[in-house]
Image (cartoon, rainbow, N blue to C red; front, side, top):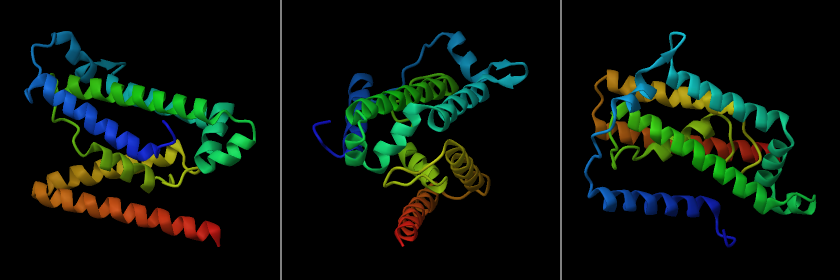
Length: 202
């Protein structure tokens, strides 16, 4: 977008969308949803929750695209070095546009699932989820500098973060300290990513 840093534009757009959600809902939950909407969160297929099927489908598709398709190779190339990718004949703008579109679709799907679990539209739901997402992908081996990462690693990172959060709740850790711990985890993940980058250069 106009040559602006993607990370900053993403954060700005997130705040914009969150602010508009507050404006349109006046900060109140949206209720009165049809009972059928909750089936997404409570229903199951062959004894397995629908949510698990959705997660498995998203991960399988993402794994295939990144590991076994030309588009996946282009994504890694653009993430590693945009200029080199452009000189190699890759349409960088097209690749980035499609990646952002896919990311937005999956985020929207996650929002629908969360709304189904809460059986309401909560404008304050999902706050700080972005930090957990960043921590999950970095812990899973994805580099914040681009060009390196895997779907399997991200899954492992997400499981780690979820287990950590659930463990803190089970241990009755005060919510304020939960945020402190998550901040430390995110910081440690970024430092680890920087360290891995330095080792790769040497």
